[in-house]
Image (tube, rainbow over all chains, first blue to last red; front, side, top):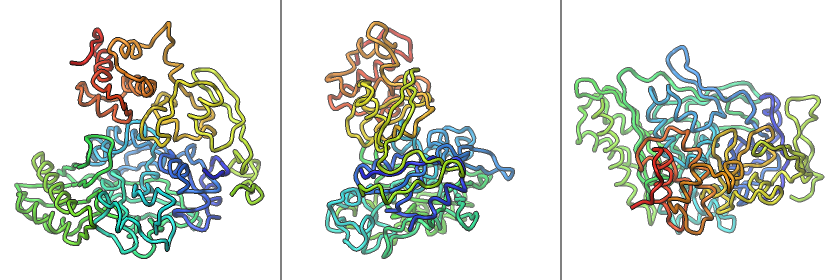
Length: 334
Length: 185
């Protein structure tokens, strides 16, 4: 690990001013905020991340979960994943979020990991994590070793010829289906970013993963009120029963009235380069009966653009079945 | 990036809300509260809580397995919650209540979970055991369901290469159910 200067932020404005001196808010930034550290310290040990300065934001007053007047929820940036997953309002109104978080990592890691940190979680692509291998995300222009290498766990949606790294987060998938809004404070003031616009596709610049600019501090995330009568569910398929990243996962939020789907929000995990919201699947479901045939059409639509690599072709069918099952379970309880 | 000349303190502590904790390669002075006892250390900011415990304070109950938060051998409690101490910088934990295996029980006064591990033969080589016990003690206060399957899920962050899992589950369940510890199967 390279050495670094550690500072503790007691004030958001100063934390932002400090981080604004970095050349990027992304991978390789020389100044980083540190929350739970579960991604950052891991990657610093591998020399994948080499920040020169760390700003500890754990003591900023961003640790609250509170109901909003409109029936929604606000979640502070440094709220721990376990606190979020077990919060009574989350369990009651946003089951998909609780289930997604509890399906990820281990109890220890969930006690450490934060809301904002999870949003910025880095890929588990083994080439990204190995500094002796080419990787366009870690070292732009060096190539992608995964294309011709071990790519079984990597993405089939949203890939480019430069990067096929999967976004590993479960929480992000639920947040995408819940249409969360990410609130950021930066040098130019505050702004709100819908989660669909927060993560960016790799394209020619896989080193850029989000729209964040230097100095931008995620302060909180808000969730809209749960649609009346809606049911939500997270289904995760993986190589082990626990403590493993998704091969495919589905977050669904559906409203069914008299056997007909009146509203659907669908996101997939484990298959995309970003948390994969599928408006195509939602289109196939809306105003249709809650039947297996309709679920199948939605799944086909969600995976229509899939580009499998040499070892992950199975994910196309796996993701479809995952979504069909998730819809079946969610509408059974509806 | 070994030179410290290119590293300036971010701001002066007096004039802003971002207090410098360290400057470059300089060691940082940190006070840690471990098992109710105060310790003062001068450490490199890169030192993890796990390394501070083991290498500086001779609290070797916490074990280093993977050093990447994957195996759970380093599990300690911070403010009553279990965490991977290998993924914590020690300098970030001033003011926190840290509990290690040494603070859970002693050979002449075992914690009920420790006694159950002995009675159930819940280990083979024993290397993962401190982490298993720290997780198990934390689990007692977590919203874990009554079944073995839920205990397994809650304990999945602690890997045992010897495969003592059935007896680990039996030991934990005996404590939760307040019954005489019995080996699995």
